Image 1: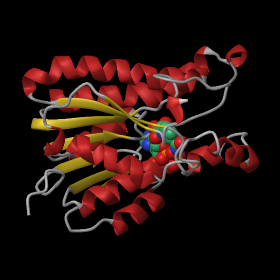
Image 2 (image 1 turned 180 degrees about the vertical axis):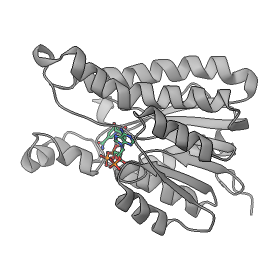
Image 3 (image 1 turned 90 degrees about the vertical axis):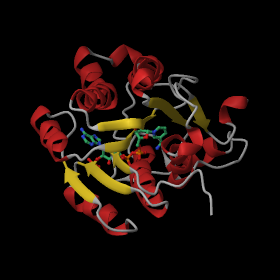
Image 4 (image 1 turned 45 degrees about the vertical axis):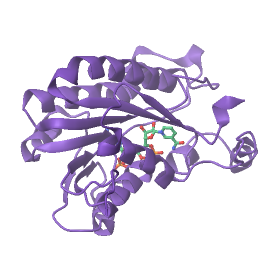
Length: 248
Ligand SMILES: NC(=O)c1ccc[n+]([C@@H]2O[C@H](COP(=O)([O-])OP(=O)(O)OC[C@H]3O[C@@H](n4cnc5c(N)ncnc54)[C@H](OP(=O)(O)O)[C@@H]3O)[C@@H](O)[C@H]2O)c1
């Protein structure tokens, strides 16, 4: 049966695959036939994701994407790819009066420099096939909205969307597409790490027209659209997945 969303025959790298959204993306991509290379820092949790992948031939490579030697190791192990999904990211609430060069460097190094420079190294090393798709997980926060204490995080995500549009233009001649998914709040460990209480989270969910946060799989389905041939004429796009939050 013709399925334009099929990922059969595609090899895809997913970063941040040891947890949350990246884990769901890897699993859902494997269900649609992709061969995965998954990466994350925590070896035990990365292996737990690997065990949940459908099909055979998937590869796991643990590493910190801010450490140059570990990125080189990953690059050397990579086969030719049809897609990259840059999911790895960190969030920390820091009110503007408390931001510093150190804190800017720390969040930008994971959320912005690592995915951008990894993409560039892959292109230089010819690791991306013609027709490949690069997907960044940005956020509504930054490109569309703002939240108290989120100045640095929002800036990293807004920077990603700016970079993605320009990469889309620069890489079009290589037939490489570049797109961003912008989730609202998603039920993952990340949202339970900060200073926001469970009661505040429950209250916040009510501000979403759909009255809940996203499940990680619902972000994965948007990513699959960009990885698949269903989006073959879409590049430089931002796809908001937020249960209608930014409509109000
Ligand atoms: N959850 C949300 O509401 C939400 C909303 C919008 C956008 N996002 C974005 O979605 C992405 C995934 O978030 P999540 O909610 O799934 O968070 P999560 O469950 O905390 O997962 C974060 C992932 O990033 C990896 N990571 C962090 N720092 C890394 C580093 N230096 N090198 C390599 N990997 C690193 C983690 O690896 P280890 O755990 O192995 O260290 C983990 O796999 C992030 O970019 C986040 O900004 C999340």
